[in-house]
Every structure is written in C-alpha cells, then in structure tokens.
Length: 334
Image (cartoon, rainbow, N blue to C red; front, side):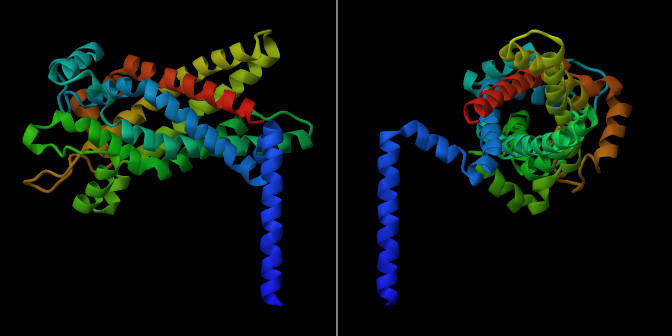
C-alpha cells in the first residue's frame, strides 16, 4: 500500500514537472514571471541584485582601489617626507610589474562584494520596503531619519559579515609594499583566508572590525540614505526623467559616501594591514582610538583625508555603478 502511494506521488510529481516544462517552452516569459514572483525569490532578489551590482562596480573600480590603499599606507608613522600622488603610485606599480598588478586582490574584492554588498543592499531594500508599507498604512511618507536608520543598520550588519573578505583584500593589496623576502604572496583570496587564521588565529579575520563597521555605517548613510532621499526629492521637485533622476541621485550619494566614510576607511586600512613585530610580538596599534591618536600625533589631522580625490574617484563611480545597476536589476525583475 505504501509502495503504491509512493509510486503515485512520484508519478504525479513527474507529470507536474512535465507540464511545467511544456508550459515554460510554450510561454517562457510567463514562466520567468512565475519564478520571479515566487515568495522565496521575492525575498532573495534584493540580495541577488545587490551582489551582482556590487561585483560589476568592483571590476570597473578595482585599479583605483589598489592605488587608494597604497596611498593610505605610504609614509606610515612619518609626519614629514615625500608625499606620493595617485599618478605616481600608478606609474610605480606599472613600472615594477605589469598593468595587471593594478588588479591585485580582485578575487578578494569580488568575494567581498558577493558577501558585503549582497548583504547591505539586500537588507537596505528589505528595510525600506517595510518602512514604505508602514508609512503607506499611516498615510505618510518615509522620513529621512527612517532612511538613515535603515542605511546604518544594513551597513553595520553587512560589514561584520564581510570583514574577513575585506581584510584579505587589504592584505593582498599591501603585500607588495613589504620587502620581497617578507611577502606572503597569497595566490588567491581563499589562500589568504586559509593562511591568515592558521598563522594568526581565527580572530585575526575580524581585525579592524570596529572601524569597518563604523565605516560601513557612515558609507551607507552617505550612499544609500542620500540616494533614496535625493531620488525622492528629485522626483518631487524636478522634471528629470527616471534615468536622469537615478544618475543625479547616485552622484550626490557618491560625494556624501566619500566624505563621511574616508577617516574610518583610513583607520580600517591601517588596522587590517598591521602585523605583529617579529622581535617584540606587539602590534603597532592597540585599537581604533590608539590608531587615531598616533596618526594625529605623528602624521597630523589631515592625514585622515589623504587621497580624498582618489577615494572619491573610487567611491563615487563605484556607488554610481552599483546603484544604477541595482536600480536597473530591480526594475527588470519587478
């Protein structure tokens, strides 16, 4: 009896699958719509679209990010001395190797986006949808403070999840600054993620997590909150097309994301790059406040904004590409 029941269930499942396949062949657009509008897919789409948008932007911006990291690490601990420029560092990288060296750490950058941007855009979109539904029920509009809270929350959660990939990226990009015999020569992001905890402990993967979280919250506040707010204001007060609204809002968001997050990005880079002194076993910095205090005392306040132009060129286009691609993906998967 049980055997007959199992056979009938299997037969019914096979028939249903055959019918679904036939329907999909005859009407592929309807089949696609059915898949896209399934409950689980609706929950997953903001995360999938966010990850794809972030990875697309990273491929475009990776060389600028490489130069930005080298700028931040140049002259560490010295208040005076030569001041490298973005152009000079780019020439040096190309002269010492190949142009493809500018893509060092791309695998880590893509993994970081697959984790971090997937999470932050996915959570932000999810939070905003809930806020919109609540605001509509109360017959009001979503406030700037609510958007800011959504951006800060999404950024903080995503940063904690993505910190290991972010640390691996910084280690890979800064490895070329060490003497040849001291270099780790990571083969890939996965090699770095295996060797770092093996040599330094699992906790090392979350080195710099606090400034990473603060930076992500500041960046999200600038990027996602100002993007959503700017787009809403442009829609209400201008006659720009939807495409131009998205472009203008992403440019505004890129500036605020750069300005608010650079000091935290600077400290994050310093903390993630540091390793114990072979002789003393001590780290150069004890934490966020110690790093900030030493930078101010030894290098000056303005060191936090060293490379702002490079950082803006890295963050603003990245923000614009990410937001425009995510907006487009959200549009075609509605």
